[in-house]
Image (spheres, rainbow, N blue to C red):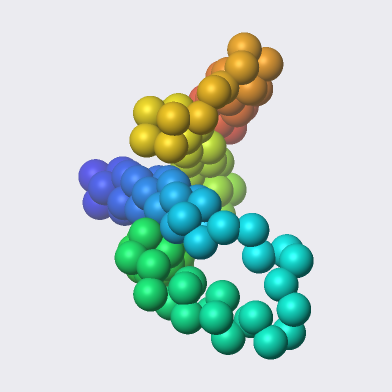
Length: 122
């Protein structure tokens, strides 16, 4: 039971972190063409963006939860069980970030679900 709760914690915090980081970086804007002098301004925008900071916090929770579960469960179970995060992240992208998800991407996501189900069968 505790393993299931921790896997849920890993998946939910990881997906939330990815969605929040994406939202934060979209608010910050394109940083690929900044000059070295602009990096301080970019760093300031990143470090004062609440979506970015909450995303990092969520991903930290996910990481340390993952380490905790690995201390008592098999890696061959934990990684496939947490792979459902791909599905949750696509759902978050669709409904929170309002991204258009085409049929091929949904099919790929369902294929991940099928793979996770196959690996988790004892």
